[in-house]
Length: 93
Image (cartoon, rainbow, N blue to C red; front, side):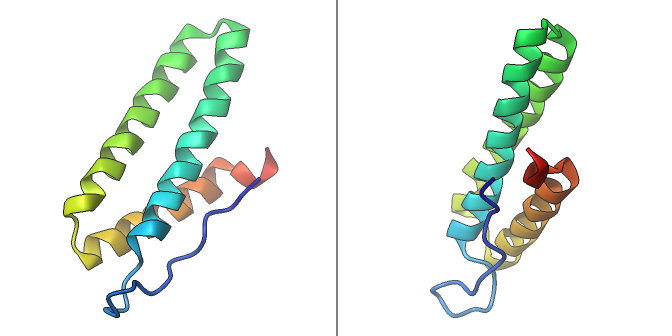
């Protein structure tokens, strides 16, 4: 499993996380939800599938907001999604 990069300095030199790191972290979580959705679909678990789809959609919305986010918000999102990925146990898939 690919683990997203940790927060790295942005190219603007402001010491915050880069937008690329934030996108990578969100993308890894979206991928995790996608794999879980396939499993739920195969199992016929419609409730789980709906819950996962809702979570995945929220991730996509966060990814869209990155384009308007300032350095502090980008760093917060990167940290949030890096921690979420760890909590989901994505490295164990």
